[in-house]
Image 1 (cartoon, rainbow, N blue to C red):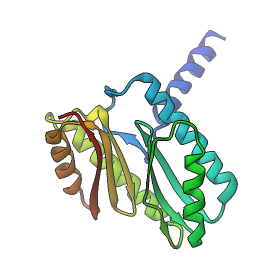
Image 2: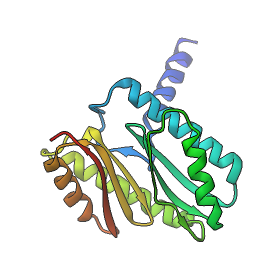
Image 3: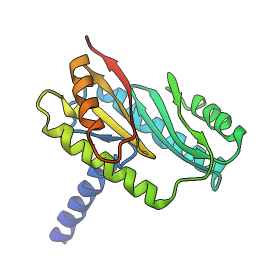
Length: 185
């Protein structure tokens, strides 16, 4: 029984470690985010609630990733139908705690699983390279990749933003790097 308990705890920790996923991966293995734990909890709740509401209302005609950082929401992905993008934005504003929305959803065909795997590979490659860069506090940067477009979020200095952007743009497959940073200098 003792070994089963240890195994279950280890499995739970492994599962929790992977929860960030490709959608909003933090660059550093140990998050040293400058936002409070309460703000980070709010961001997690915003992402979960918004994703569930979008899935409930638009299953089959929307493939949207919700990433929240300091209560600012980044929406990426695709929708079928021009009005769906607006409806999703309304859903996000109905989630408690949302301060601002960067709605970068595009209207068109939903991304293939191959495209999603490529985006995941790009995100992981950027994450690994940024972690190696000693001039960047990697734990504060969120990385989102959608169809080769990379979105960087976090609370950073301008020097860190420049270094992270340069690192991301050097990764094969990256089409564009979009900076959505909050600056501390």
